[in-house]
Image 1 (cartoon, rainbow, N blue to C red):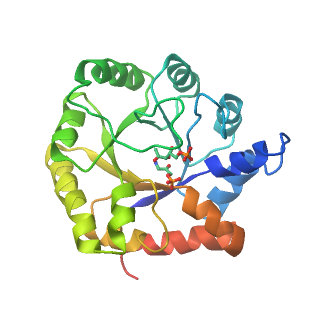
Image 2: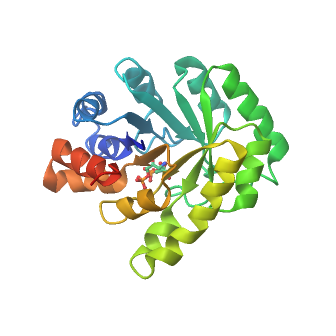
Amino acid sequence: MTKLSVNINKIATLRNSRGEGKPSVVKAAIDSERFGAQGITVHPRPDERHITKQDVYDLTEVVTTEFNIEGYPDQRFMDIVKDVKPAQATLVPDAPDAITSNAGWDTVKHETYLKEIVEKLKSFGTRVSIFVDPDPIMVEGAYKIGADRIELYTEPYAKNYSEDKDAAVKPYIFAANKAKELGLGINAGHDLDLENLRFLKQSLPQLDEVSIGHALISDAIYLGLDNTINLYLQQLREED
Ligand SMILES: CC(=O)[C@@H](O)[C@H](O)COP(=O)(O)O
Ligand SMILES: NCC(=O)COP(=O)(O)O
């Protein structure tokens, strides 16, 4: 079964636009889980453009499914994960001023650095996922640094999906097969939506988790959060 982890970054974006507490990210997490989300993902970026450090501490008190904290492993991130001990930490190579995550790790070039980080995160009792491009070499690098899972960066898939979905998904099949061969768990995320999710799932039956935020929260503005989460869950059900 592929789990849906709802990324609530964009709830915090809307909240921060007025500098007050509405909409509440805590309420969004509680309700998302009540509506069927099997995980909550947040990305507490250094500039706190959306999810703040305090949000993470508030959320850890209420999240009952899997809490997934994404981020670049600077000291602030490591301190947060050490304190909160989420089910999963997902390492992304984002620069502090990146408008969004736009690449996977070079797990070969940064092997020594990442190996130390992964070891420390695992000592907190947290599962570690490494954000990578769909490149078997980068997947193998994630294995060598001791990661538990990879997260396949799916923006390229999403971008090419409408033009040629078979070509778009092909690198991901190779990368996922490599991960499986090495015993790594397989997550995926970035720019997944109601149009492209089902085909990805059908193409990668071994997918453990997708984390989806921007499109899902955007859809929820029109369709409602309950209905939207269930539409995404429906895309992940094998039998449909
Ligand atoms: C790692 C990833 O692809 C996304 O979770 C990313 O963290 C989204 O960040 P923004 O919500 O800031 O665009
Ligand atoms: N790891 C991907 C994620 O959490 C959400 O990415 P997006 O759906 O906001 O692009």
